[in-house]
Length: 554
Image 1: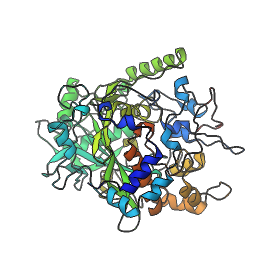
Image 2: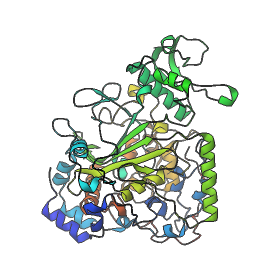
Image 3: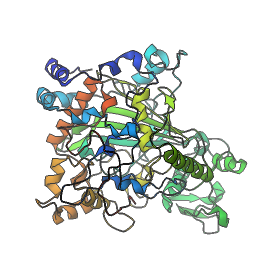
Image 4: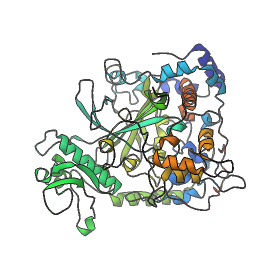
């Protein structure tokens, strides 16, 4: 594996070593938060007010009217910084660092060689990280000191067939399936630093027929049912024989041939939906609960966050190298009633103890809980670029976005943004390595407006911090109005917004590599080209955002 050059490493040392203690091996499993407000994302410290102009409102994409069983409905956070006292200090120090010396010290050739290395799979297709976790577990990774790794062991091959199903080095199915989706507005636009992907896996009973044997057809249908339940809409499928599955999927009153899963779930009105295969039998026994807005118990997600590469066509693209591999598993079923009671308890807690911070429950191996049935864990680069487990403190930030905010659905975002099964390549089940998002039309809001155009209008840029000079120049006039011609291009192809120029892509890679060299993730893991300006170091008590008109994510 290629190491960073001596010149570049020297530049890193001049930047500072505030996180040196964090990088020490003995601290990985330590149940300690140097940032007590680690669950508060750095974007929440954005200064929204714009002098004499209207306030920027990036808050709406997270803090919005929720959909049951998410009862958070935190739209009021668009209006004020409602922080507990310990969270008013912004400890995401990497946002304020000047990386210019580092960017100058690392050549374009060097960073390209680095991001094109596969730090997940070896040349023979094996997964070195998995071998290390199961055969050569380092003592400083063993959080509970029992001599074995009790967390998720990476098993995805990242080799996808024509239906998006993943296969390992031997060609066997792993159960993972890639889903294509439009990036969540803001930080997750690749122009702000990273590309990413999402894989989903359902437990074996959702993959097997009623005799207990694996069935490709059963698995595809059950995944479509999950998609319908999360999106609350009908989902197109390849034609299937309903008689063989014993379920009226299209709700036409007959067991015949179905080409869609019809969303029709209203149990108080005696309207139900059913899984197929072994899951149908389990559902009858009460072992496979089903409800709208909820994933099946045991659902897993795998999310790789990657560097940017420059493709053969000269445009920015997904790189082979992983920055992170994030994993989530639904370990507990939470009913609508329990969700409502949880939010009521959280509201009471905030009222009675306004300066008490949310407890972060978990550890390096099992991951961090979100109080809503999910656990989140993951792996990140060590200073040499190999993947290692994220520490308890590094994982703590997961509980912010995947916890009590209005925008997520059962803790997540990807499935609600999955490409329409009726109108997209492989019904929206594919990986970026199979097809890029170039030419993908802009997603539409419920009011019919372009979602990304609305974000640009609300925020004044493509990121929460309003720091993306490239998008600002590309999409905005000098007076701050949007360029009509660019909005027309955006409506037809989201790549004109979400992908950076080659120059910006390489600089973003270098900026993030500086954080890797420092191992200072606990101080923020954004790729920062210049110190953030529209950002509070200390949020005044009672500070208002200046936003006067609420907006909705949906």
